Image (cartoon, rainbow, N blue to C red):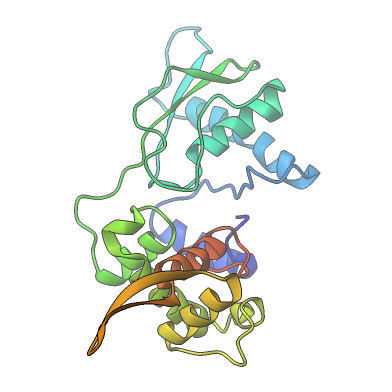
Length: 241
C-alpha cells in the first residue's frame, strides 16, 4: 500500500471479494510508523484465526504454524517476512530483498516470525501464470517490476508508463523533469530527462567526409530513471487497474 493509490480502497475490497478473496490486510513493510506496525501486527492473529476455523486444522495439540508466502515476483514477500520479524521478535531481516524480480531463487529454510504462537514462514520465489491473459496485463506486470526489464525493453515500459500517468492525470513527472507541459511523446520526454540528468553517450556517425563522434542523449538511461522513479513512488501513488 506504500505505492498504491488507496483512495479507491472500498472498490478494491469489493473486486477482491468478487474474486473470492475475503481476508485482506493492507500493509506497508518499509515505513515504521505506529499505524504501519499495527497493520503488520494484525497479520498473525488473522492468520491464526483462519487456520483454526478450518475443519481440517491439525487435530493434535500442536500449536506451531508453518506457512508459505506466495505471490508474483517483486511484490514484497521477503519485505513482509522481515517486517514481521522486526515487529514481533525485534530481530533483523532474514530474507534478501531488492527492487527487481528473481532475488529469492529458492524456498529458504523456515524463518520464525512470531513466538506466541510459534509461527514460521517459508519465503518462496515469485510465481506468474504460465500464460498472461493480455498484452496490457503484461505491460502492467512489467511496469511493476515483476518481469525483468530487458525482456520487454526499457523504452517500451517507459512509453507505457507515460501513457498510464497521462490516463490517470498524474502529471508530477512534468515538474520533476522540467517539462513545460504534459506530453504523450515518449521520445520528447526521454530527451528532456536525459538533458536534465546529464545522461549522454558518444556514438560514431558516418558522414560524407568520414566517421565522426557525436554526443547524443542516452534514451535507455533516461527510461531507466523514469521507470525507477515510478517504482519508488516518486511520481505519486498509482493504481494501474
